[in-house]
Image 1 (cartoon, rainbow, N blue to C red):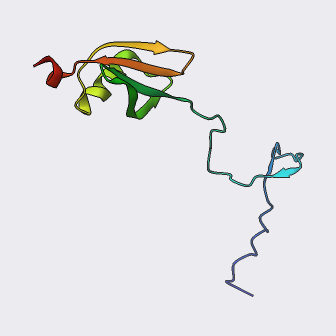
Image 2: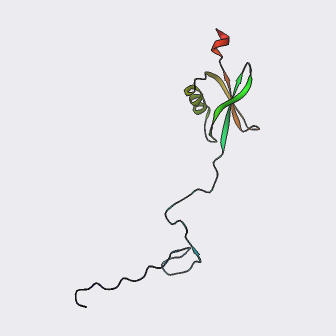
Image 3: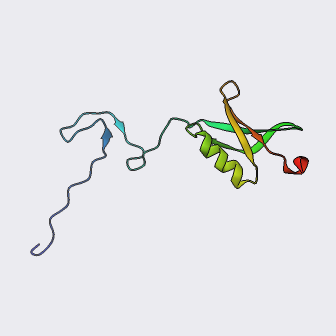
Length: 103
């Protein structure tokens, strides 16, 4: 027919490991989503008070440093004056000031 468009070639599925020259065997299931398969470990934050040790109610990334933990505790109305990392418990332990008891 005059003025009609030429037929488009059919699109072939792309397979992992396949170059433009061919090869590969497994179809890509998620071509645009890059998902990290590694789990990201987190550390618990524990608070040591005169009444005993308890959870602060949150965790921090494994890469967090003492300043990050201190700021997170302060934003939750704790007053930490010392922090230590306990690798056996995989947790940060904070010593906090109990203002009600100190007053």
